[in-house]
Length: 53
Image 1 (tube, rainbow, N blue to C red):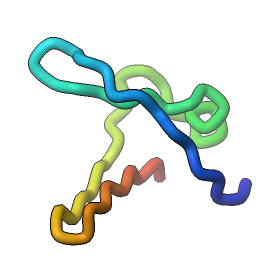
Image 2 (cartoon, rainbow, N blue to C red; image 1 turned 135 degrees about the vertical axis):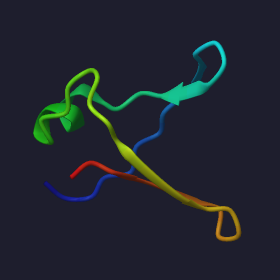
Image 3 (cartoon, rainbow, N blue to C red; image 1 turned 180 degrees about the vertical axis):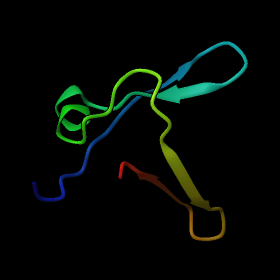
Image 4 (cartoon, rainbow, N blue to C red; image 1 turned 90 degrees about the horizontal axis):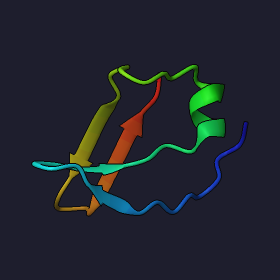
C-alpha cells in the first residue's frame, strides 16, 4: 500500500477531540475499536504523525 494523502474532520468527543481513521486503512493495519494508536507531534514543524504499527 502506497502513501496517500487523506483529509479528515476533527470531531468533538466531549472533553477531547478526535479524527477518524478510514475503514480501509484501519482494516489494512488490523486496527480495531479499543486499540491504542501512537501519536507523535512537533509543534515547531507543525506536524502530527500517527503510528499504526
